[in-house]
Image: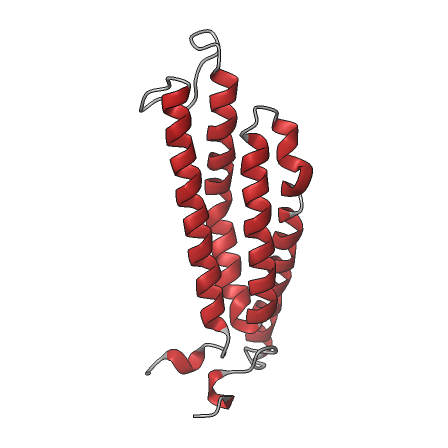
Length: 160
């Protein structure tokens, strides 16, 4: 197909990881919706006020877990898409680790104890740092004019 030659052979896996994160995001949004009903927090209220709702903290923790994931989503997507061009396999592994840690970040936060978000969730930042390294490597390769892919070969090398 025209245009696909520019992507490394394993870049499709990067797309699958991004879609997996979308499913996680949909699930988190569903959980916020359930928490809205459970804790009686109607739309368009973003956060419950403790003086008006005795269970505000419980709802706010669910909401905040999802909100934080939304805040980091553009960073994660950008790092995956760019870093995956030069390093598709490491990006897929790091992206998958990030998704798993985001799940635990959200479920830990949703308990109502914000510290529980960090039990496993804190390791997501290591995955983001790894993705930054992949993206920096891609940027350097563009700057130096070297081959765009150093791992998981270009599609032009694939057998036809």
